[in-house]
Length: 249
Image (cartoon, rainbow, N blue to C red; front, side):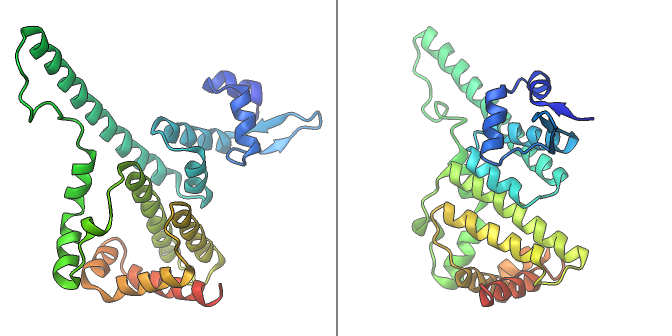
């Protein structure tokens, strides 16, 4: 079944103007244009719109959403990641409301709230520090590299990069499972899109830089084991694919 812009708007509560804008920027394209010039959308477009709206609920800018969806990642993987992010946000909001209720309670009583309780819920940066502690300690011990000193934590940026990294590695792992050669056009496009994302984040990553990083992941025990735990042979596959991309860039 195909739907017009008006029908999609009524179904999803997304304004016609917004749908036209999504079409204009290439974020959501109709599957066909009728002879009368009407934009028509099918089930795949509805699914993509749903994914767009979930990302919007998570405050992702349209440009980032476009980048995340461009590589045609698996829908189930996207939905699973979005669910995790929304659940994490729900838990954080729940804790913030609890902190707010406690603040109101203490204020009404005229008491001073314990300062350690005043900021419960504002812990996203702390969560990132905890998540990166093992890697940070390893890098400091083996390479004398202080991860936290060299990289200031920007929570929103870290969340976006983590989601993109997971999509990228899942896509590369799936390519390996499917038996695609390291220099297959699909694999090379995935690498290009990932590097473009990194550069849009201000990293100034060249194809050669990414190949060097992939080689480091292969040679370093900590990072190789991390990749191999996801998919056997992934560290080797990523390294060869990255070096192939750099060679023919």
